Length: 493
Image (cartoon, rainbow, N blue to C red; front, side):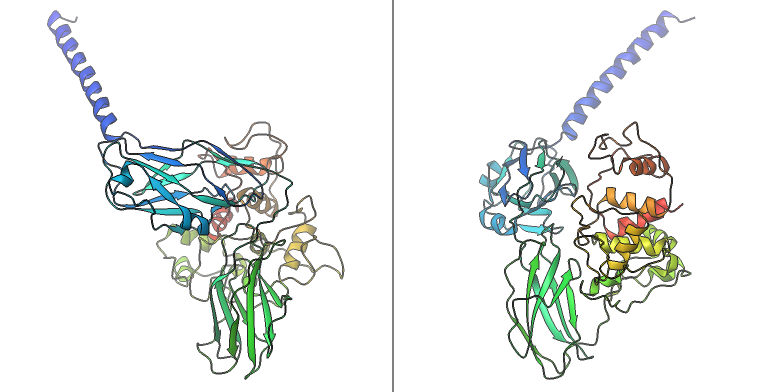
């Protein structure tokens, strides 16, 4: 039986609880109010557009608990969009305004930098913002637009480690317009003699998303001709010329190409073969050692494959950027079937490096221990794969056993970074897994339609077997070396 006294006490406690909840909500609203971050409007781009200005981006400090503090603001284009920032125009034209600029928190012409292969723009914040201070960022230019079919996503803003999504979206639509955008030229070029009598050239690739190769124009005791001596697959970033003799006066020029357009040429490089400047370096030890071999050379470079019986500790100790305590180390060791895991000559694994379709295909075929075969003379493979590339046998084998089909135009695009949808399909087919038809979209971003039909059964398999807790598949995500190893580790069982 409940007495009147108890009822009054319960009523009082109830009122206290309600008051507590109201106070908590009020306090929460003050402490955790989000920033206002929004572009002026959503923006449409067409495939193969030239450099284009982004709409103005407005950021307002809404909270008395200051979120925007001294440090940097990072604006990142997500990997799903084939867009990068145009360094040249953005550096020369970027302009900011608003009360944050008036009050000295950000410079009107900030000294910006770029990260993540020009996918991230970094703007310095000189002082903490105050409540309601506003920053407007304009004159930011982007380029690329190599994506097809159409896709969309939002800019990511990072302030003091916290990430926020833009309120508006960027869209890229397919277009039949020819690509007339030439890549930038290679940078940070160095040339040196090696102790074995060879000449080594190293450089940094331009960040253009459709870059295929860097071409070497060469002259021995004369100026280089306009014809490429060697074409070096994107991502390799070095060439060792062994066809030289002591005393030769060697001249080189570098240029980049996307397969249709050529960059401006580099400055002339000149060296006399003779006294070495550095100890001999071996070709980088990569999971795809062929990255140090020019695409026109079928000779496999020397590599040091690590024993498949190596322990996690001994395997990972060979890489300066991986420790035995790293959870990735165990995964790396578990897929070291046939001793396929190798690294670079500087002792690193470089897990964050993107991996192209040719490199990825070789890794998968070696993992499943496929019998690699060579095509017969003049036997067609793909329109962009000849019979004497380092990757020819791997591409031919993969096509022969039915794990790749290429693109509708008859090409394979070996230098193109492999995306998640392609990687999942190829790995699962190589492992011989059975697929089922798809009647319900496996992920929120995998709508059932004609464009997605080719990869949906494989996305469904991944969702049901190893990825039950994920809502998004992100099919266009460009894969890194680490991510491919982790995917093999997940799907191999």
